[in-house]
Image (tube, rainbow, N blue to C red; front, side):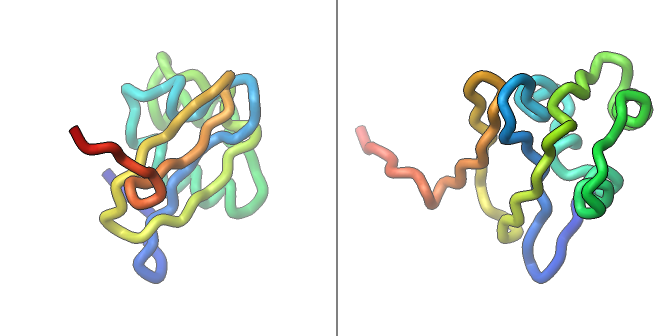
Length: 102
């Protein structure tokens, strides 16, 4: 899986707006979290269209969360997960979470 890495950090795509998630609505396509072509569009302030999403990820991909994609830069090797509430995604890293121990 290709990733954009700069200065020891990886670009992670997520959709913080309400309505539809980018990854959480397409979690069978983890490559959508890192895809270099989508990262480049977001950096230019552009939105990937439905046709591009289908070309990159297949017909079953829902592109509704693309309209407000953001990039979170995480250090290489950081464990993270994407949380979603009502379509609004957030990036949670293991070091920003207070874990309980059994």
